[in-house]
Amino acid sequence: MTRQERAVRTRTALIEAAAELFHRDGYEATSLAMVTARAKVSNGALYFHFATKADLADAVAASAAARLAGLIAGGAGGAGAAGPAGGAAVGRGLARGSGRAEGSEPAEAGGPAQVSGLQGLIDVTHAFVRALGSDVVLRAGFDLSGVRERAVVGEDLRDAWREWVQGALAAAEARGALAPGVSGRDAAVAVVAATVGIEVLGAYDGQWLSPDPLTWFWHLLLPALATTADRAGLAAAGSGAAG
Figure 1 (cartoon, one colour):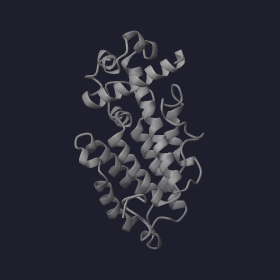
Figure 2: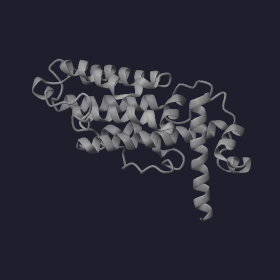
Figure 3: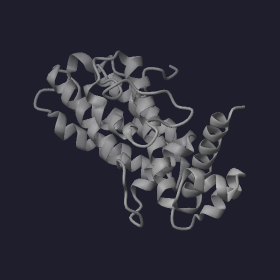
Figure 4: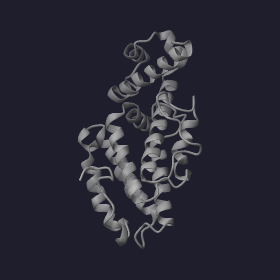
């Protein structure tokens, strides 16, 4: 293993250890000594990469932003990409630090692709909730969005998510995919409130991160959101759900 490979592995271990501790114990209660112990690295190795706990937290947030961009790009690609504009809000977070998180795929220039319709938006929201339950770095990145004890240098992930949802629904409105009288801006308020609410509640009760709460939300919203012609073809549980 080369020196550069060892450095990347150490940095990744520190970010993942910090994410686990930030999520479990909170930002304030987590010390750098706890991080080095969990990552099984020396203090010297830690300070080679991060001068302060705030720097380490910013690296966790940047890694989480890269993962969020990746899951949006994956969900949008699965539904049919229609250009990069809608994902630029999330993609901006990748410009910090090293540009992307270790172990993540680089995003395309301009951010992840915009979804092509309401089903794409539904699928991305389900991918988002699944990832919150399985990816502690992503989970910690959103936890850090609510931390007021530190100066947030980079992007707030909740703001990034809100901007992306607004862009997706504005594009859906422009394509005539929304019911008459429904604005993309108003619809985004409901979608952001529901998904961020699930994200916050999921930190205390993992049942919120199961597919059911989000599926129930879409069952309730779609009759008011989608055109009559499109409604029957939309899967509230996501297009990849069994049955």
